[in-house]
Length: 171
Image (cartoon, rainbow, N blue to C red; front, side):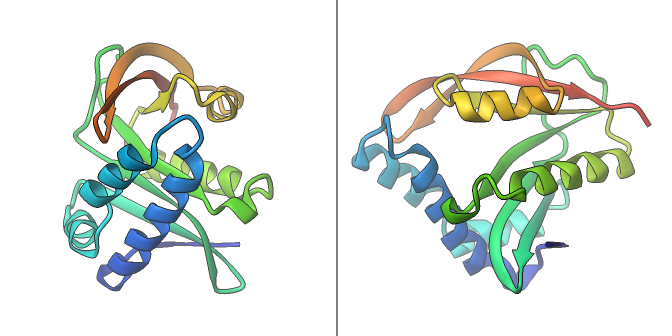
């Protein structure tokens, strides 16, 4: 598996990958209408291009045999209630395409996230995870993330509850 930084040429790839992985991850338990609205608001080539250009945002893309299988989005200058570190970075997205879930993509992306955060001098990684996403919560707990709070997340027209989880890092 190869993990690389996204560049300005990846905006369409990230928009398509983001829509596909988000849909597959959250269609169960949500309506088509709410998912469609969220995807329209958050996953377009223009939005991804702007995010790639943002110096506080880092995208890493996972590839196997030149096939894109997942990605992460890290966001600096971001914190949330319950996050106590003085220099945290948010793990806003970590997704693998459905066919590769359980095949180590998530683990490699998490390793890359932790490595990137440490290299850039951050002392914690935090994230929001839907309270109903038990598989993801267990994955984060295996990596040492601890629940430190809660926050709301709006999916289309549906306000949902997310757990805020944090992993403290040592240099």
